[in-house]
Amino acid sequence: MEPDPRIFFAAERTLMAWMRTAVTLIALGFMVSKFGTFLKLLAGQPGNGNLVFSLFIGVGLVLFGTLVIAMAAVQHRRFVQGTRVADLPEGYSSAFGSWIALCLTLMGVVLALYLIFSARGLNLNSAVVN
Image (cartoon, rainbow, N blue to C red; front, side, top):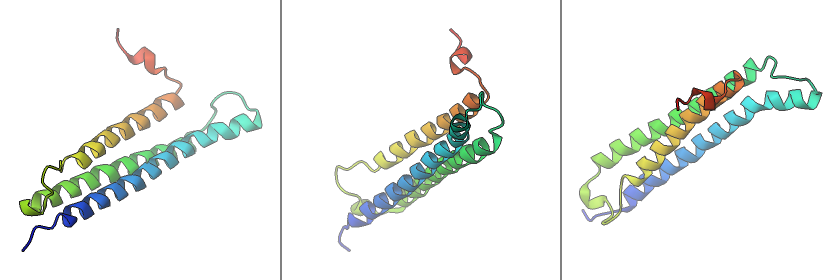
């Protein structure tokens, strides 16, 4: 059998498609978590009030999107490890997509923590020890 790098590139396109889908879920989660505050501002009501439902749904979507990215990266890594060396493109890093997924996963977790702490009225700067 001749080497076919199209197999690897198809797997990488699939990883990127999953990451696009997950980033959309994360963005939707951010918007939902902040939508309750937006509605309160439109109504002219002061303070954060009770925004637990929009926060719960929003953070859930952010964490779900983050989980999708992590699972897609694990699945991609397993596929690449099981691929014949001849099918991998010469001089091309097979870990690049995994690194992007790892960075997006970490950013998703940080965003979820930010949403939780900002909704509780905690100042993240005060949590840093000087």
